[in-house]
Length: 235
Image: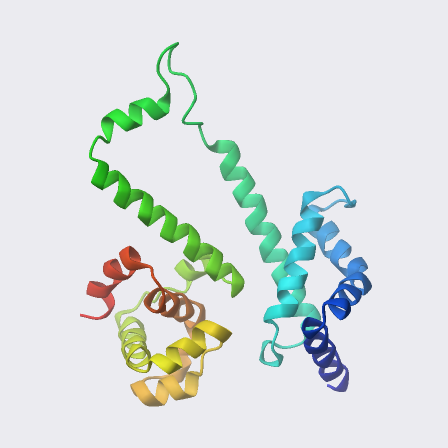
């Protein structure tokens, strides 16, 4: 216990001082390399993009760590693993994407065809805005160590659980200071929400990541996503 407390204090001190931050990351570089090697299932070297991703993830873990998340090292390991997984998935998607500039014949590209088929500029603008919102939302989720896949997995499947989350959302929206605190820290004051909304704390705990994601949507400028959820969650 004392060792975990000492580590937490070191993390807090390091993120307040850039020099201490660099020293801390350098000290734990062997750990970062070991995590990268374990993920790659081969020895990593300084030229691997994955090592850079892991170092950034470790730094983000320092900035987002709180004692409530448990011991720092297991937490950092999880952040690194999730970030590397996201990176690999993103690279795989990029390899599967067909370029809009891919020629269909000597005078026509795929992008030209799409532009003709989707000739309504308003519809195209709304589509692009929605895509931009989703990408921004995904990045914000990442800062809380949550992926879209985890959000989907924690979406309530039973109506009773969904109703509980609806009540928690309604209560939190009414208390903007509470909502802002969640956005800034990523921490859910479950007891306060459960007591205020008069719902089961255990149910909220089971859907913690889902709730964080929903709270983020309703606290920021995700207009299209929020409009889509309004009818479903706040009717």
